[in-house]
Length: 386
Picture 1 (cartoon, rainbow, N blue to C red):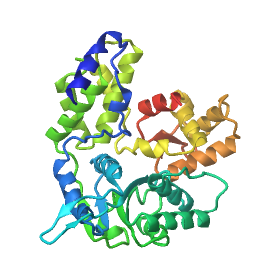
Picture 2 (spheres, rainbow, N blue to C red):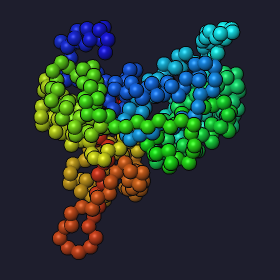
Picture 3 (cartoon, rainbow, N blue to C red):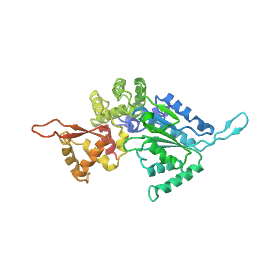
Picture 4 (cartoon, rainbow, N blue to C red):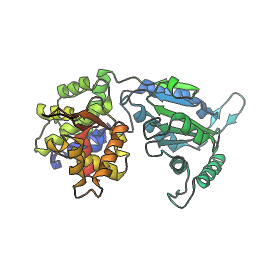
């Protein structure tokens, strides 16, 4: 945080009601322009991209590691900075003459949203083109031709493909096949959680991100809460407690703190209490699905999940009970059978767990209930703001 930000934050103390100053600073699905605690990993990425700064084609890359290890945070920040320099000439003096290599274009694409050929071509083209790209009225092949023409006129393009191989995202090999069909001068930088041996692709460079070490995660959380919460809203001991509980996962740690802060605001508390923190932690299941996956769903499916997490415990006691309650909600215009089918589909892709409910008296198979695998407190808040 720079000095101006610190001054502006203090000027805003008197006008803030509640403990949250900047929800975006706390959100696990938002990334800061200067990531904390990943300097060595950033240097490894820059080393791999170094040929691009001297006019050569950089290598293809696969960046892998567990959820919440900072892969997306580092790559989005780096590619945003590099995109600002893309296509610019850089004067480099050699022993014989001065040359002016042109930097490639850099583009970041989230495959949670660009999960089809059309969407992938559209998002890459939007990132490197000066002209608006239509969402409708153009076919996939037309878009491919336009992207090919644009790449040919822009020299090299380096594309970061984030969140590969998730249930709703294309695999690494599929995404690369789609891009290589357009132009071989598009260099892929893929991000995923699977080890390199499992992706059916042989990148030129592989870079592994480990989980955050405890003291580094504490530093990251301290930086985020200093921007997102009012002064003294959370103690250093509470931050350390969340860091230990999260076991190196920044996503889960931020989700727990933001959930605790939202609960504190509901009671107009000036600080986050031990009870608030406990509730925030309880709102993040273990293992936890990234909230970004949930927010990438269609609005209608998010609505069903919102209704599900808003139900009382008796209404969530079984799939049948939840289905009937959700279908009866004023904002839902679906039949119970359709609601049940979609809920099962969401369970099949890992967003919900089907858990056998305690057996009641009598014979027969005990009912099952649906348990969310994502941060429920935070999801309810974010969906309610849409």
